[in-house]
Image (cartoon, rainbow, N blue to C red; front, side, top):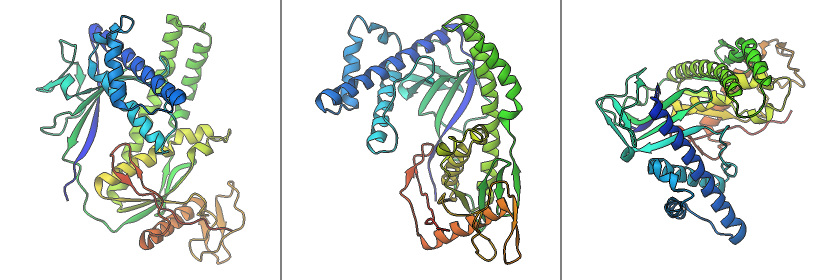
Length: 399
């Protein structure tokens, strides 16, 4: 079976002063148009119960450009502005489908700085990328090659809080094809002491990326706290230092999760995980920092879209399933099992490692669901692949 997967390849680049100024203006115009369109749609619904679509906001944009107050919108490429309106339409579609919250206004300081260009607004020839309104190609560091013969359909330029510039090229990747089927299946129990525990008994250590840089982060944050509030240069410099530490942590975490999920997907046909509500778990003040650093949600997202790419199956077992308290040998359900108890012995004589036992029970429950088709939850669309990802779960088992 041949599948067509669109994949984003992200590279760092170093703009000239002229290019940086042009892109900064574009980011500002994109944010302005997005916020004005959101305000117009919100006002139309509040006053007249009228739903405004993309076509209406596009006509508004044309009118805005003709006014003296907003004439500066003509100074940048029109494509990123139109793409901002399309992104807003997508956000409203997700809201009305009850898949996300109501769209929020973009902040100059907090929102991600980005602009998306379609094929009519850039030129890609001989490995050189030139954007609209620019005379020179971008100085891109090609850290890995694009698929042979690949042509970008869209290009997204962004700048992170640390001041680094990135360009993301969306291409069709013919190298992504289903892997040969394998009969292996694995249960995966997420934790904090160990990042993951597999039903095979293997335990994957938690690197603690944030913990490794905690002292450096604290120094940078104290330095920032001493700066006078406002838009001063010293405060901006201190803020970038904090952002650089966070970027270092995020990059290491993402790299580790990519390697880990790729390995699990390549080795196993079926992967069973627990359907954790990470957002609710973050309300635990004592564990929230460690839970955030573990990045369970990011791990699951990567696992799901890679499984969709390579023809694997990911099954999510209901969060109320008592995987830790259930004996994987005889099926006896233990009454209470505090978090501090890492090993326990069942009445049948079997001694269990808490995490390995949970992974084994998750695997058994997931395979049962896969076999009988019970407890399948509504499909959700993966934001990475655009394909439907089936979430399956077993019913809650009462003690």
